[in-house]
Length: 259
Image (cartoon, rainbow, N blue to C red; front, side, top):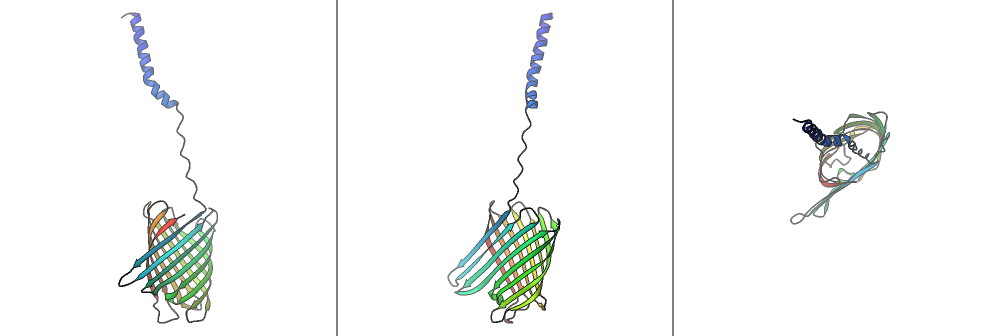
């Protein structure tokens, strides 16, 4: 083989190798892809409104409505402010069968990652418990027993006062003690279960207590809407009108819209 032929062969091999290595060199030369931008922080203000309606007509005419709201202000500092409202109203054949309105306001101040102090205000009107109004401002201390993204459990113990006006009776007042507990757990990205409990005792008669228990299941329809089913149990141990039953149970179904 002549020197010229060998030289041509060497040149061809070098050119072929350069062509094969060129794509890899271009890939290595490209700048790294830009990192995805961080998710925006959650807004300071969050809340929701919900509404449900049930109608029947024919042998029995019924109207049942329920609604509520909750608003939370959390600037990611030490203070968190929450307020919530609920109304239940029902009629059967023109007669009122349910009438309950509730409002709560709560301000929490974090002492550390787990403990917080709070101020609380609660209002309740419940016609079929005989309560024209019950007002209870309290304050106390609470603890986050579980605080992870999927599961939260907190309890609180407080004290303050309570004023109650029942239909047909004079207004009564007393010092009060409270215990509250709240639990929530995300079953999946779209489904959540929750549970709440509140106990209020009058110190001048500990048997005159009010207990409220709630259990909820919510499933997302889209980013802004949910379908929520709630079981609400209200128990007054010592109603002034002895003809009233101590326990009332409500099943609430409604649509929730977040904002």
